[in-house]
Length: 341
Image (cartoon, rainbow, N blue to C red; front, side, top):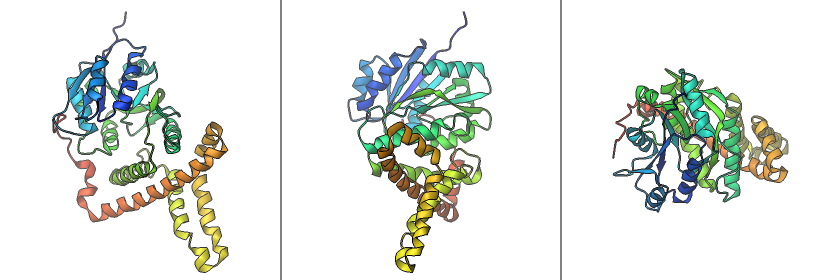
């Protein structure tokens, strides 16, 4: 009988007691039998460690709060498995996910990383904003199924030998480590997104937090996008990029009817329509899935997201012009895996 590799599931965690039990329970239901689970607790102040111990998994506690990328690296240092599966503690996997990941990685030596997607329903539904985020992320990520150039750090798997070859995630990039690591991996291996690798995620449920994450991630990705325009989500994704610009200019042209006459109302209306048309498939999906009433709410929230992203792109471009350090963001060497432990 063919020997099946041991899989080390590495779960970085910081104050996610609310979801950690659901995450670990889903791992206990996996169809793949050869799994060890390592929870790397990043100095939580809630009951996370006690919950992890109740589930009988290995727990590694960091000396100080070091961030998710460094916590993943630390987990890899303690892992015994031939396959590393990195999983965020606010995500509960479907039962056959680990098995699918192992099958993909063992069948193709050119495959460096396999990533997954989120289900359209959140793990713990709390608000309309969270439902927006769940549907938006599901549509965007699932639509990229196939070969990609980034990683989705919430759930991805790779052979341990590939991790050792490529090196650890850069702990200095707490908000954009996925982009830098994907860039590094694709110099040597392929990255594939497979929609069978999936789970329910506890998304952010406040609009302020969602917009803040969109802004910071879009701004921080600009130095890499300028260097590598084929990167997932970058300038190569022209339709969504134009949609964000159209939304911003819809806001900027909104005063024109007051200043120059009602005929100028056509400008912001046309730009708003163009912004929606840039991602029309997403709005159609949301209407089919959640109905017309929620789609109107979804459209309003996504308009704010588009404006935020466009502002972030201009802010990132300006920062690139003014700061050589910012331009070299992705030239920073990855520090040791256990930096700060």
